[in-house]
Length: 458
Image 1 (cartoon, rainbow, N blue to C red):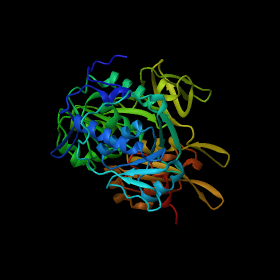
Image 2: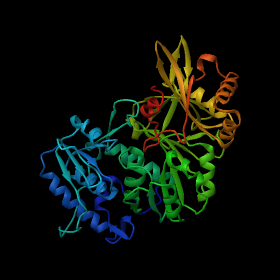
Image 3: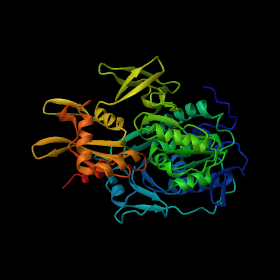
Image 4: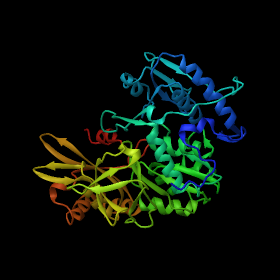
């Protein structure tokens, strides 16, 4: 694998890397934390953790630097690392069968019934000499969770070796582009995309990262410069449409869900780069990427990722960072152009049966979004008495808003249904609609299905 950055160090030997002690690791406002301070903090906290009886530790941090300290201290203290996907008090408590101890900072409130250890900002430096052994990556276990937006959170087990392997792929693809940059982010380190892109990869490559996330579009524009990389998601990039003050970024990454072409183009206008979209999941990690010049821009597989289609044209994957030599079956329907490029057609698990007919929710959303009046949509099945029907939340374009004002709501819905009949059978046309300013998403850009369902519960 072509790793041109001489400073890049694998996770196995990262903490013992020969770097200047004054090299920046993390930053916030006017504060910079250095490599020497980071080594001291990890060494001190790993000693403390080694004496604790807990075997499985849940890490819950708003501060990404303190998370990094706890992450590597846990590795060296031979703990199993648990990363809850949601830091809400009861959401963490609900996962208590998975861990023995919660380690957290002041940003996270932990339920009283849980064993907890609060980590505050370190004073950096009580151990005179620090040295670290090489980590046995395959022996260190990390449990992540799917977002659980439509049901119970699902635990996904990884080894540190799998994460290290993917990080080397990322560096081979984009390391040269990211030389002498720093990392700003709008996504959390608690999910696999943020864990890799905003934290572990920067640490391995020697790129300083922000301690806290940017939360608002205006913050992104304010922090943009040619030495900054933005790790983001469609949830926030779509909200940049009201921002018009352009400033270059070295690179923009987006993952967590589909990025509308309009948002990709606007990001290009603001930051002089099309976002690099990364396709993957908690189970697979990253497996493909693209820069969306047109809506049909194909995806390209990561190096070392093998792919094929099953009998239903769904993607099967094999790569060292997924499941070693085993094939992993997804529910993503695809069309391959060649061995490495493909189009995503949608999820086959988003198919419902209504009155014996199979209906693709992806197809219904596609037909809605083809209409000039609709910017974005989300379609869900809902039980209406004894009958299953479709309901849609939609975001209107400016033209759509004007059409509602011109026709009135009643005539607008009639016109909408009439337009859909050109594409969809009557049974596949949503019966109920709600107009929103934006589709409800979580911090990872995943749809909040439970929130959407509430809109239709009369």
